[in-house]
Each structure stands twice: as structure tokens, then as C-alpha cells.
Image (cartoon, rainbow, N blue to C red; front, side, top):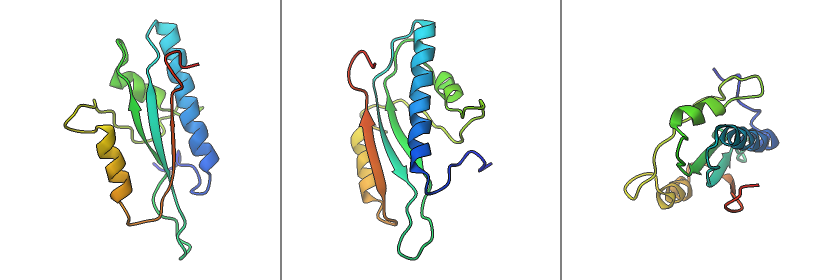
Length: 130
């Protein structure tokens, strides 16, 4: 089901989808007495090479701190559009020194030279996450 996908040129919607997810996450944490997690995200956007075809799909590589009470199921349920429909594939893995650590993800992103990339990186501002 590709109906949830933003237009390949609509990077503003991709950013807005992430911001809305974080706002839902913070509201859920506040409502349920769960500490707001620290997070960092690397967003990769679709690009249009010189031949005019769109390459890749918009997607996020997110690092979300595990706080007591925050589970994969909760994160999955919050990754939805404004109508409550899932926004597609979401895979949440615990990060440890052997797999899915930030260095491995950054290396992966930098080594994939099969297509031009447009990337945005952002993160929480600090402990209070305001």
C-alpha cells in the first residue's frame, strides 16, 4: 500500500510527518507518566538524478532512547498519519555495540553511492525535550 507515501518531491511533508510523530510520542509519554526519550534522526529523501527519474524513497533512520514503559508496540502505534493509518514500514531495534549503532548506520548511509542523496539530520535539544 503506497497511499501513505508523500510525493517524491514533497520533502516538507516528510519532515512534518516526523515532527508529528515526535509530538504524538511526547504527548503519549506525558499522558502515561513515561520519561520523554532522547532521539536523533537521519532523514533520506528521494532524489532526482540528471536522467529525470526519481531515485529511492523518503525514509528515516531514527535512534530513540529506551525509557521505562516505552515499547516497540507503542512506537509502532504512534507512527501513523493524521487519519490514524500506519505510515508504512517501521522497524524498531534495540541499539547495542554489535548492531544498529549510530556509527554503523552513518557508515551505511555514506557508503551507498548507488544514487545521489539528500539527507537531513536532527536530534533532541536536551533532557527536557521541549
